Image 1 (cartoon, rainbow, N blue to C red):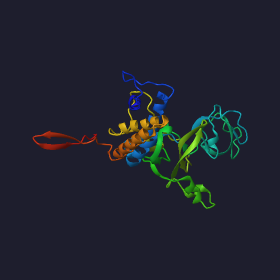
Image 2 (image 1 turned 135 degrees about the vertical axis):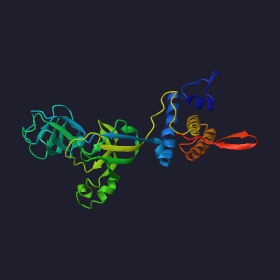
Image 3 (image 1 turned 120 degrees about the vertical axis):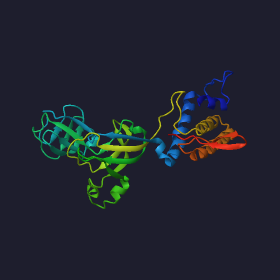
Length: 308
């Protein structure tokens, strides 16, 4: 794709290899290709055919686990390892050894938080789990849009309870002065899709309410989602869109290159080609390839290849 862009702007040598100079670089071309792919084509096609990009994942219900250090006193909870983050304020610390819980009221550092009632030295050496209702997944930066979110409240649950989607503004606008926690229950949980700072990196997360688990449960949160494709970085990478749409990426990146070269008339021509290719892509079903025909005994037979 990179070579095609260089070819369209006539930046190739006699061997059809790209000629890179101060005007256009391979880094710029690669960026334009990915912009057209991930910012222009993918979101629109995914909105029509989310099943083409669907993925699923499960995760445990706790945000962190560790052991209580001997330095814990009164309502100060100290962990022996760095397990706390600022996002854990208002979360729940569950002591699985004593089967007790405390609400986290303040964050001090990665090993120390304040809880709502005294633990003194009773928790020293015990195992704790932290429940926050906030979940990130291994490829969370590629979560474009949740499709289905479910939770298990006990280890004996056979099925996930579906969480209804809710926007943050809807959540708090509907509370009308009431505590937001009164608006949902384990029978009717909700989730919001939001951005949180995780290790100082803005990250897409799922926030589930309520998160009043009484024990740690493995694989208790299920997510089916539209997965954003990874950037194209190698010359052998293939765009995750149906055949028939790949050339549109090249047209769009070529238009960007010509805009930089101030060849505006040519840029407009390639932009028009990009728009036309995008319109064709929106009509392609993900399970099909463009229709081909074979002439046989003066009859025309249509063939459509479908995925199995």
